[in-house]
Length: 188
Image (cartoon, rainbow, N blue to C red; front, top):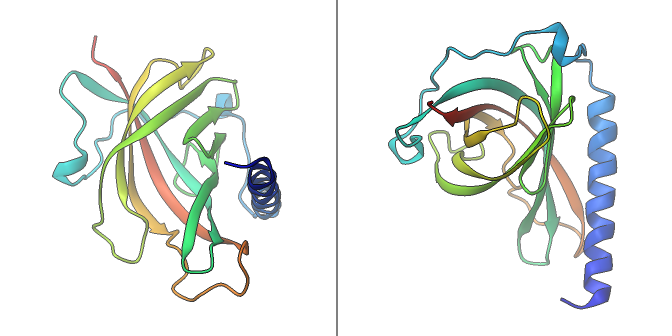
């Protein structure tokens, strides 16, 4: 990739993350620190067969996400750029526990982080982004994301690329979405 293209892409990402951050900052969701709430650990998500977690792993916790899926118009179609979302302990978006952004990466308020790679997906709702199974490729820091092996994204709403064409090449748009993320650890 040419340096000028990298600079343009970095500029697009920076603009998208800044505006998504402003959108999230202006949301009306109450905010609490992770130590003010308890994370759900006893639920199993309803999932498609294609995104089942392999045996030997169990749900460690689950969070609710609210944010945007960022897309850029390439002149023919919308290219996915990155997700930007806040993560919450409660279904009414209470008890902020971290953020989710490109990579894909999930980072807790306590500083732990997990980066994952997509393994499989399914689309039970054609009006929303797919449900996913992701495998952890790195974990950093002590905290809730330490030792995570797999992640499932389920119960998604919104987030699909616009059905209409963009106006100019490089145009960035943000599409609101919600999802639930289930984080698994090895069953030791």
